[in-house]
Image 1 (cartoon, rainbow, N blue to C red):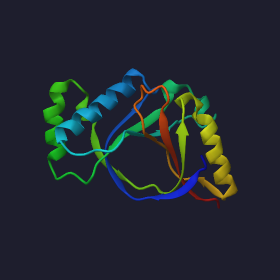
Image 2: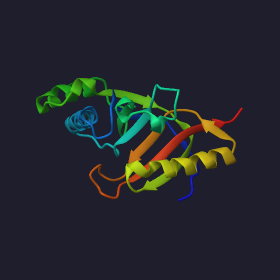
Image 3: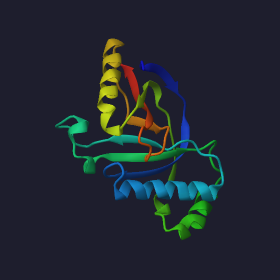
Image 4: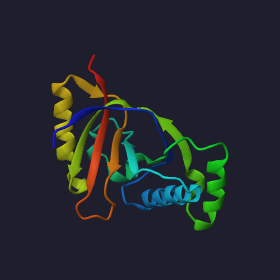
Length: 172
């Protein structure tokens, strides 16, 4: 696949922020909380998404131990919920045992982004990220926000498909 430059408008999501390796206990707990609240809200949500970063600037992000990765896990909503809807959904979902108090509503805008469809194991994303970096360099673009992933298949799929997205801006 070839990277593409796209524009991403504001999006409102259910969000849980955390730290830990993908598929680890913290990560799985956050996903459960998101889906419990989304179910209680009864509305349509988009695919699970993640925005990732590390706080260790001394080495490339993929060299930082996975248990130190930080993330926002997201479920996009079709519109901004009316006042009180999210709180009521948290209360209704509390019986599920999920950590529903961690679920928040957030709205963010990425603007210009480079996107690339990655097909294959998450452990092989570096090759796709390298293609995106080369595209950015060729077009005079630099990072302008958190690395963003949209999970097009379930985490248990042996051949996952992930839309990789990187907010960008012109290099100065």
